[in-house]
Image 1 (spheres, one colour):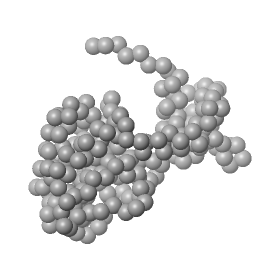
Image 2 (spheres, helix red, strand yellow):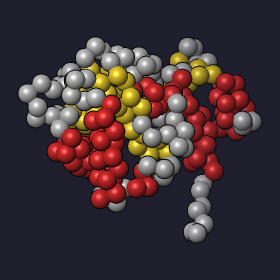
Image 3 (cartoon, one colour):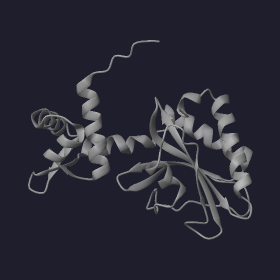
Length: 218
């Protein structure tokens, strides 16, 4: 097995950015305690991130939030390159075989973001709203993925829990063992029932295998 070499300061910086992204804003002591780092170490990392534009201060300088550089990086995700091409190819293949609308969703703060959508060709189908950002309740399949993820997690379902007549399933999508988003399919409950959802999941696994993306599952 190859020996991986990680740079500790970069790993800590990314963990701090991720923590602040989830919290919205956070104070120095709160971040330090969550990261289990000395206050002086945390402060040094935050100072550097602030200097480079990835962190900014609010509430009279007492709290830290994400800076404009993070916004710039987030907006660049719209460029269809690299992993985005893989995701789009995966969604297209899913829709071709299952023929229900498929999404790839990220969690940004307390909201969810549609990175990509491929719409079903069925006459009765789910069509996404114009706004890429959405609010979802805790009982949605997507929220269940992000809130209850474990190593042996397969997929989550929402069987008319959010909207009557609509079923949904969501599968965690990992890179290097890290959850980055989830693949979602949704359709009318009379057609996209539990049996069909299980079929869709098996199709998903087969497509992942065919694309050589098995590492994204576990």
